[in-house]
Structures are given as structure tokens and as C-alpha cells.
Image (cartoon, rainbow, N blue to C red; front, side):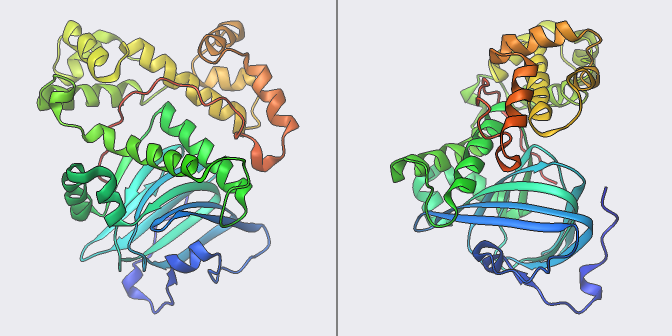
Length: 346
């Protein structure tokens, strides 16, 4: 993990602007054991797709300035190590960069520090606020008010979001600049960016959409977070219901209405998604990954994996070894049924 950050106000520094990062002109010196790859695809006026892959064997710290009027819808994958940000906007707030998780940021003029050790990949859809408002019409006001208050909305997870991030990362890394090289109409990439953004907005739909009251929704999201906190072992339904103050029948019905799955089905789906990501990106053996996810029998793990994805764990591992390192997870079939994800402020 990275070490605690220094107070960014205590030192004289030269800020690196987000514009420089997006243009690939950031003055970040390449040192031994470190590398940076970034690409920007201009999808339309006010809409860009940005990919970053930074690897630092030693801990690095960069002062940043957000000089662009953009909403950033980001998904980060920590291949190794970790990162954190410390922003200054009247108060100082520190955020961890978690693997396989999404966040939304908006803070033009805001300064901060970014600290990283290890390798992190990030894909971001950057949207000008007026364009975002045109997409969402009246539905953006509540979201923008919340974002203005916090500067960041964190905690987005789920199989579909992961799959969309993989798809966009593949497009971004194949484009090499202003336009993707894949044979697609320009509207296709615009549609994918809009679909990616929509996954960050769905959890903010009014409670009437699910027929559940706000209090029950909050309890169910707490139950979901507790359920998925340890993918090696699920708590019992009795334990889960007791922790959040619901009866077991109410908990089960609520999961089906809010997440379109029973607690066990949601746990199993996310456990297999975690397995797929590790099989694609890690060098650990299939048996080690199975054991980490609570399986003592390799055949049971393989059967569960095949039921969800239609192929065995060993097949995805063989495909991964045949592809270049930069394309390890791009061709993995993006399969998963969506469950709403609750955004939480950092």
C-alpha cells in the first residue's frame, strides 16, 4: 500500500494540469521501473474517452490541477499496489483508489495530490456539463447538486460496469489517438460512452422505481455491502437480516426487487466476476484463486464458473497467455446481469 500523504499546502510545488495529462504532455519523468501510457479519443465536442496505465515500482507523488470543465466518470483497476488522492477545496479530503471500482469526479479549479505505487489502469469518460445536462435533461439536477457538495461520488461496483470498462479500455488502447481503429460508426462509440455514464446514474433513480421506501433501500444496500464484503464466505440470511434490521422474507423480497437476484445469486455472480478478473489479470493458479474465493474443490469452482460464463476457468487462462499483455482482458466476454450499485461519498 501507499504511505500517508503529506499536507499539500505545506510545500511549494508546480502543479501538473489535467489538460497536460489528457494531451500526453504531463512533465512526469520516466524513471527506472516506471512507465506511463495514456491515450485520448475525442468522441465529439465536449466528450472524450481517456485511458491511463501507470506503473511505478517506487512510490510517486504528483501535484495536480483540474483546469478542465469536465465531469469524470472513471473506472480503476489496480493490477498491483495502490493509490490515493488528497484534494483541497476549502477542506482537505483523502480518497483511496480501489481496484475494479468506479467514481465520478467534478472539481474545476481544484488542486490536489495524486500518489501511486504499483500498476493502475484507468478508463474515464469525460463529459462537458452542458452536454451531460442535454443527455439527462431534468434528471441531472439532483446528481449535479450532490457532486457539487462532495466533489466525488465513490463506491460504484458491479459486473456490467466492469464489462463496460473493459470494452471502452479495449477501444481506447486500439485507437492510438483521435479516433478508434475498430471498424465502427462514430455513433457507436458515443453510445458506449453514454451507456457507461448511465450506469453511474441508475442507482440514483427515485425509490418509486423499485417500489421500495428510502429506509428499506438503505437497509438493503447495507445488506448488499455486507454480503459482498468477503467473497470467500457469505454470511447466513439470518445474520444478514439481523444486521440491517429486516426479516429474512423482507430481505429476500427486497433483494429480488432492488437487485433482480436473491442474496445467494448476487453473491455467486459477483464472486464469479471476481474470479474472472483475477484469471484474466493475475498469475496465480486457478486453484489458488478458487481457494481465495472459498472453494476447497476445484471441480465445484469450475462448474460454477462455467454456469455463469459458458466456459471453464482454464480456457480463459489459456486465452490470456496467448494475448499480448496490454490486451489481456479485452476479449473476455462481457457477460453479467446488472445489479444496481450504491454510490457512497468518500
